[in-house]
Image (tube, rainbow, N blue to C red; front, side):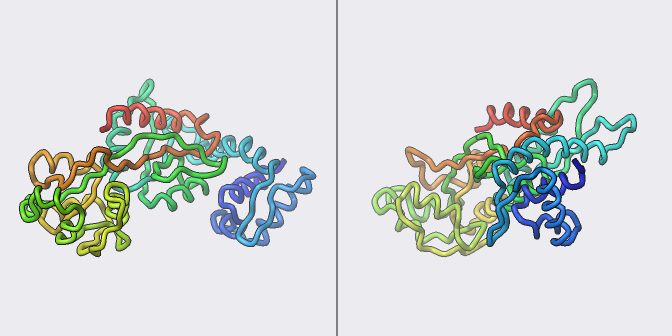
Length: 301
């Protein structure tokens, strides 16, 4: 069986589309279609079902992808690293949300002990859950951290940890509304405070309001910055209220730079998942990083 045909097949399987696979491979779409048809003729079975938006693998296609993909990935690793003396140094491609990856995952991986001096190089990229999972499926990443659990059998997810969300603001805002007023009137009093968020849709504030107050926020975002660390900096400077992961604002809370405006009996939680392509945990450098992050997550709170 031609390895080039298998490589094209695995790329289509991961991309879910001949068009996207062609772009990833640097080929024309007709060339990709021709290679898949050739492979299907050799096997005597269809590998994909053509649909209006991309393709869906058949049962045979899924089985072949799960058998072939890890070995093709290993061959790519060998080709990239070569056979020199230092070829044991494998590159781990990690992707995830910027704040969590920078504040938690990367520091944990920096402490990953080598075995007999052997380790791995690291390349990290940031993105949304959708971007991260698409990149992982397409083979751009080895390991992904996502707040969304992937569907299907191509990607395998392990729950990594939960993060607690906290409603915070600078002390002057808490003093202005008063704790007594908040307990008497509830969420409406919070409408007096400007909102700091990562997106115009208010994803963190809306999720908190729905979970804790069973309602929707009515105030629009006054300050919108696409990074939770920037949201914390703005909230600390007095720009307004924000909803942040507790791990990210714990130090600011301890120093009194911000205060929790509300402490619900059951705080909102969000789960992070550690995601790999099926079969790739057979590769030692990916397996070691996966296991180490799981161990490190046990001490995160």
